[in-house]
Length: 345
Image 1: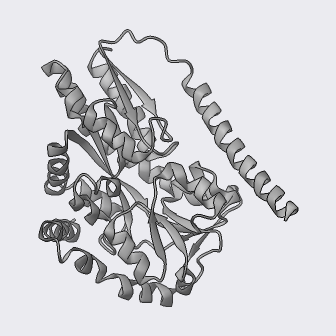
Image 2 (image 1 turned 90 degrees about the vertical axis):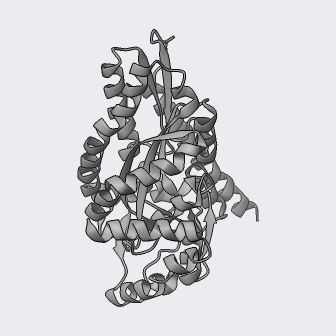
Image 3 (image 1 turned 45 degrees about the vertical axis):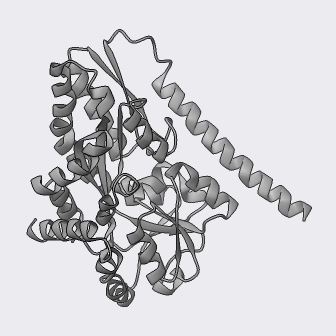
């Protein structure tokens, strides 16, 4: 018992040390933020680091500061430095945080229709997902969901496939049985997990590593970039790719804060999102190409299910979208609209 406790304390110490090192590295990278000479400061947060959402904010910062002639300073806060995802979204609504970018799944508390983007087999591949969320009708609908909640949408992005990592690897469809897997928290994800024999546990990204370390969850569903960026290789050796869902992200700014800006700067803030959206999406395509080798370099493995299991998985998951939304007409209509856009793009 003493040896086991010591091992647990050692594992926990290693995890805390890793987190402390990451925070220290962030502090060194960002340096001490001097008093701003700008007229307005825009704190822009995200839960991830060193991936497409983080890069979007970097592009956005360059665009806004140039277009505003330095009147707006954009401060970048990756890796949940402004708090867990729900707190960041609330901060944008209140005006304490001026900008946030993250997966739309986490906005289901704002409006359940955001959850349709985690529908199974909705997109054919990554180009199809990107084309669909950049479709004028789809993007307009997404921004309209945010507007009544004191948030203004400025961009949408596809972040690639949502993959599975577990301490006991998922090598066959049957390996899902009995597992507790972290999800973003939508009803579609919960029903997907149930179909596969697993339990979906909603959890912000910032809590995943401690939960894995403590055994609260057996694994997580995330983009490959998250496994790489947070160096989960010492906890999860195998990432299983099935391409059953893709991660869709939305960037929003605070309406209360936006209203404090003069008209010309409001236009800068809004136009900058559209200006860098395609640039960030192109960056994502190149970034995705090297993720598998990055994960392998960390000692991990990228795995796919056997073809017969993928076929069975598709059969199991195809009905989930309709089943999960049939009792919510507005959500079902949104799913139908997005499905139609995916079919034509």
